[in-house]
Amino acid sequence: MIHPSSIVDDSAKIDSSVEIGPFCLIGPEVEIDEGTKIESHVILKGPARIGKRNHIFQFSTLGDGSPDKKYNNEPTTLVIGDDNIICLNLSRIYVITEVLDNESLTVWRIFAHIKG
Image (cartoon, rainbow, N blue to C red):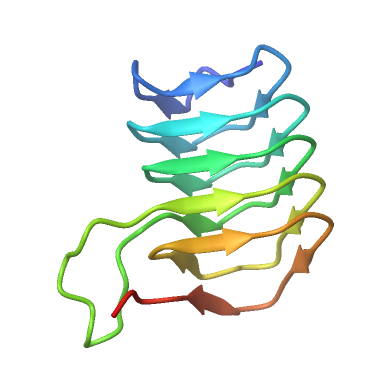
């Protein structure tokens, strides 16, 4: 179910069991697998692959560009595995990043791996 106030790019691939709350933005090149729940006000930018049964809480931004000064607009990819909890104002996950399975990411943490 996708809340009517959310904006989902036509090219995004979203499993029919995914729940997307109000005021979310799902960009192009985003794939979201079965059973994932996305709360309100979440921004997902691609290319990104979100695995199964993840729970992304409100006000998280994933797949956005990096604030790191070494980042020079290189192509990026975000991969999140299965059964993760991403919550409490997680600022950004970006730039060739992989979150494995069964992790809990919380409270203003910023994750990045910049190639090179």
